[in-house]
Each structure stands twice: as structure tokens, then as C-alpha cells.
Length: 50
Figure 1 (cartoon, rainbow, N blue to C red):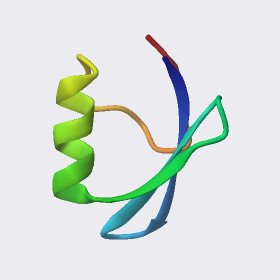
Figure 2 (spheres, helix red, strand yellow; figure 1 turned 90 degrees about the vertical axis):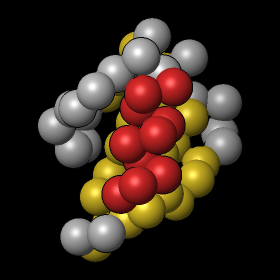
Figure 3 (tube, rainbow, N blue to C red; figure 1 turned 180 degrees about the vertical axis):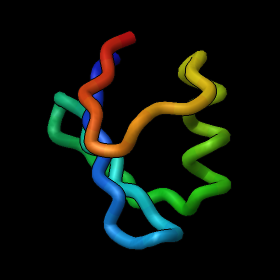
Figure 4 (cartoon, helix red, strand yellow; figure 1 turned 45 degrees about the horizontal axis):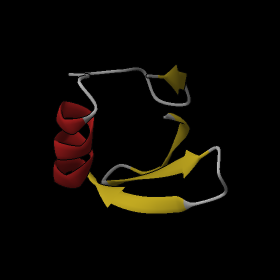
């Protein structure tokens, strides 16, 4: 699954999936999402591929 991330404020990040979906996540939700995807930390605005 591939996605892009965009920090929209200090406490929220939007995750855009390449199938057109997107979610706005808090920092805690983002950490949980990244752990679920097998990632620990990434730079914001980085293109990611699983």
C-alpha cells in the first residue's frame, strides 16, 4: 500500500492513499498507523511504499 503524508498542523497529519482515500490523524493515531505499517518514524511529506 502506498501513501503520502502531509503535516497540516503540529498535532495532525493527513495521510493520502493512492487509491484516493485520505485520513487526518493525530500524532498518536499516526504513530499507531506507522507501527501497523511496519514503520517507526519517517520525515513528513515523504512518499512511502510498502
